[in-house]
Length: 178
Image (tube, rainbow, N blue to C red):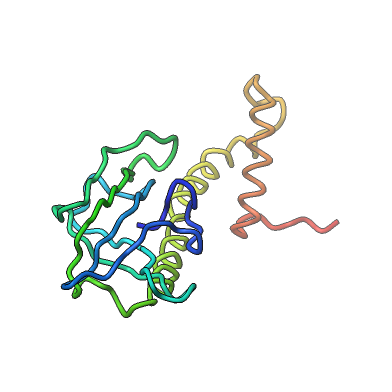
């Protein structure tokens, strides 16, 4: 959980804090737009460890849903990616045992970058499937002679253009020499 209302996912401006306690850490902050938060049993939360130098203070913590001081908000409404619920996390004096620090102190950036690499790489998979389906639906219209196309030629022209563009991007339609 990285995203915050004021910082977005700008890691260098996160406000969620962690302070050392006698047997672990105490976290305070608020996270928003956390994928599957309403369903998750465990969270990885990024926070800044107080007393550490800048850019060496980001830490990742493993926090269980029933941890004292952690509140999980309900699912939030959104326009896209409806199959993945999103919610908020509120941490108020949330105690985290020392063994729940992931990696080492200051190692949160590495964990964040590794997670983002996977997320950014996989987030486009459903889009590619949709584009492929659109291409399959549009290609038959692009092959019809102009006189045999349905009346809404604006839509057909847009589909034809999209189908050719998508076809070229997937190397399914050769580009004509000019």
